[in-house]
Length: 237
Image (tube, rainbow, N blue to C red; front, top):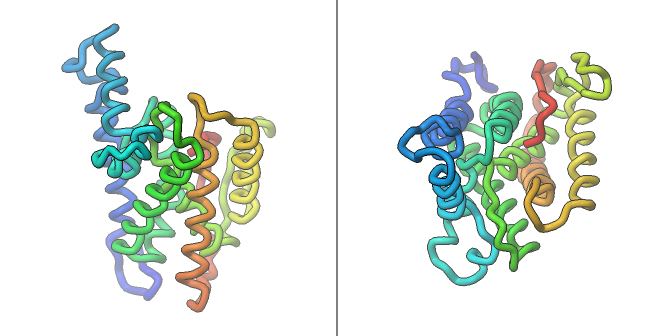
């Protein structure tokens, strides 16, 4: 693999590391159901609830003055609620994270990822400050990656699978795919409440933060012209 300055690179180490960390924590945690240490039945359910409450974002706690809760918008980025939740998020991170990391550099991408995720979850919690529902997942951070990708590589060719087109693999410019994704999140957020479900507002916030960061950071830099191939699944981050 060659980086943007034409120097041999070792690949998107941070992207792969984030994927590995999320997968490892999920498999060894109580949610996967693969770790016998958490028991079965009611004991497993209790362990899962305790796990989410400890590491996830609870808006009422976050704005209630608990010092430990201030870290939960970071820890929640590595916690997922189901296999589908994990795999959907990791697919999007794998597809869009590698090129974004190589453009930004490892250190900047790491800080960018964590910052987007923290601010997205914080914004969602602020909008639902009295909610006691736990929020987990890397969706806000990955949405930030999508926003940055839209600015950095708008003409990159993305292979997408659309269920309403019988899952036919079709190639579109990234700007079409990502703006379509953003529109779906916006429509879903308008009909979503503050109860259990997908935190669409966190997706929108993360996407906007990521796009604005890339615009501000790379506005004066030479734009990279590349026809990149990627695969996007049907799952939402």
